[in-house]
Image 1 (cartoon, rainbow, N blue to C red):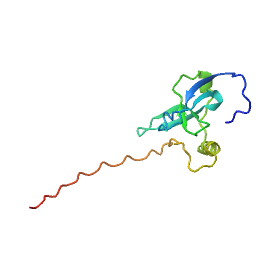
Image 2 (spheres, one colour; image 1 turned 120 degrees about the vertical axis):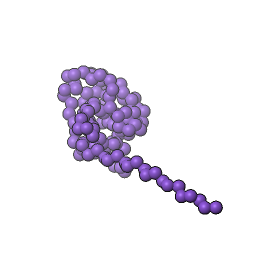
Image 3 (tube, rainbow, N blue to C red; image 1 turned 90 degrees about the vertical axis):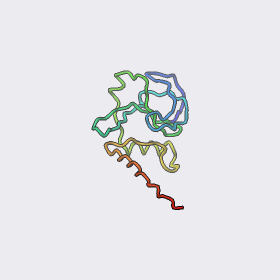
Image 4 (spheres, one colour; image 1 turned 45 degrees about the vertical axis):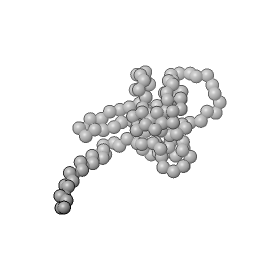
Length: 129
């Protein structure tokens, strides 16, 4: 996203800070005016089969995704969709200018990693004197 010429704000918008909330944190703390066209749906899946949806925007400065926790008008919420992984990666490359790996963590769709096994207890061998 690039501002060609500032204009009069029209339509719905909300002031948000790039925090990375809901996406591991690490946002650049930029204060942004986010409009309906900047929003999209992301989702996450749980081990129990349930899923949650989030309204998200991508920071035009650092490429981090932040979930919006404020109320979104229902007319806007109903019009949002979930972009494909390819589309999100394209946005990342455009924002980051091809500078290395994307700074954005993309939520997995059903391919949740297995939890790491608990470490096995170590036996302490007896010291002989």
